[in-house]
Image 1 (cartoon, helix red, strand yellow):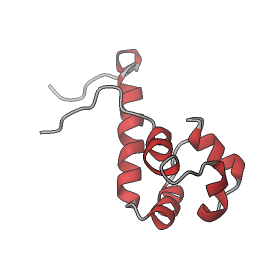
Image 2: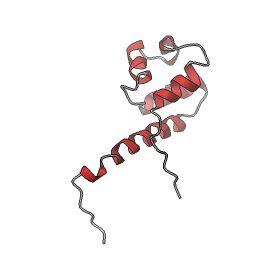
Image 3: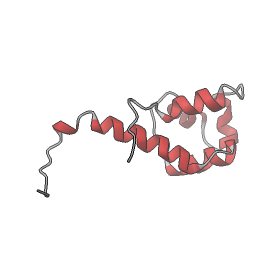
Length: 95
């Protein structure tokens, strides 16, 4: 049984709140992660997804697991789509 989270946070909120703020850093972490400041800024501001490559980068830089970052992004994305699932033009193929 899976428990669905109500309005899960974007991974940016987790990245900022649980990692960057306590480490007293922000966009300046981009160099350590190996990405541009623009790329990290988009993620931190919730304007970009955490890609599989970025999850590995975050894992290496922060000591967290790539799977946990993927899980946060997937949970967020799925919840977003479920909010308009009734508008999707889908017909059930099973009885």
